[in-house]
Amino acid sequence: MLQKKNLRSRPIGIFDSGIGGLTVAKAVFNLLPNEDVIYLGDTARLPYGTKSKETVILYSIECMKFLLSKKVKMVVVACNTASSVAVNFLSKITKVPVIGVISPGSKTAVKSTNNKKVGVIGTYGTIKSKSYNKEIRKYSKDVIIFSQPCSLFVQLAEDGWTENRITYLTASEYLKELKKRKIDTLILGCTHYPILKKTISKVIGKNIKLIDSGEETAKEVKIILEERNLLSKRKKKGNHRFFVTDFPNNFKSISERFLGKKINNVKKAKLT
Amino acid sequence: MLQKKNLRSRPIGIFDSGIGGLTVAKAVFNLLPNEDVIYLGDTARLPYGTKSKETVILYSIECMKFLLSKKVKMVVVACNTASSVAVNFLSKITKVPVIGVISPGSKTAVKSTNNKKVGVIGTYGTIKSKSYNKEIRKYSKDVIIFSQPCSLFVQLAEDGWTENRITYLTASEYLKELKKRKIDTLILGCTHYPILKKTISKVIGKNIKLIDSGEETAKEVKIILEERNLLSKRKKKGNHRFFVTDFPNNFKSISERFLGKKINNVKKAKLT
Image (cartoon, rainbow over all chains, first blue to last red):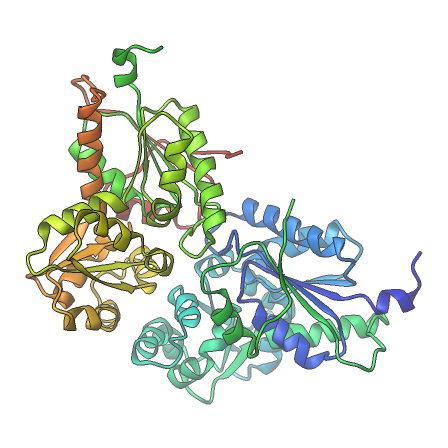
């Protein structure tokens, strides 16, 4: 068996259906700057949000196998859709800890709400799966959950239309029901949505607490690695490597918007 | 060798990255009601618009091979992205005629324009490929082409937001440059866009001729089958079969909006 010392120096693996998960990677980089990280974006088959459960589980297994082949010490499922349907499944086929983005965001929302009214926004697939509802229910029996798919948000974020009038009107249309319900906490249940945070906050009200699932997931990664004595003891900055299954047309500009900095060291991955 | 009589009774094959190509299928059904048609939507890997040329060619070959295994007499590439990058390639690996949606739309636009100013709208991938520009250049040396990607239109069409204020404003933003250029003809260079025809026409001006690539492609299918004496002699209505590589969440409602009627007889296809 490998010694803890060797395990500790291994990278954290993160996968997503595409580029959105870079917002989760960014949160991990910020919180755990000394950790090595390998990011895989399944850009050849994105998005997962519109695909069936069976297909998403299959794709997720292939992504995880790729990360395991790179000897990661932990797998983070950065995609909300894959987190909704595949995390339990993935946990059963590896000894490495696997976490998704649904559970950390849900836990924090329950802690954050005072009036027990929580909103969840996400892709059609995430909302339909009711995965946030089920997860929140584990931590609280009396929180009332209101949810709303916001399908245009992904394209708006990718196009960089983050604060214009169209985005404001679209957000107003999507969020009007949640506003009526007087929620005090709103979960951004899609990796793309933090890019639109300012507009969402303006529309829903500055007093409403926005939960960024990516940031909460980074905190959870730290807790799990601490509990298992797997945090890197390294003093210098970690190494970040990026893999994609395809180089989309506008990969560079979108990825830089999501990561908040230039992206180097990107290679093409072949999943089998 | 097969006799013409047997060939004539074979189905027409149509493939697309997903559901958008149903607007092309609908045009074929309307123009050639007695033909059998097999439609394949590669919903497990949609969209093609954001993927690399290499990946789109590979996926297109797999789609065509599936249709050929069903003994089609002709292959229609309903996807603009696949038409842009893969039609020439596909034509070289089969004896069956293969046509895409770029050429018919381009030809009609050149015939239609009086002031020699043509606009093209499409996904980021289609516009970046300049495939409409290259095709139009084959038929005219002096037509000036202005193009504009309209990436939000796909999601707007899928969500059924076809005529609301947000769609109107989005169209106004995208089309403002084309309006300034005083085009008299506009090619709808994406299978999703005919769903938004009313709003697009309202924004760009009712006097601007809109070219629906799907309708023009259906006319071209008829011409090619006539030329090769491959039109079905059958008197009764043709049989329509649909295959998808995945059943997306909202498949039924979207497909019905695109096809304009209930969709029956849908099976899952496994591409190899």
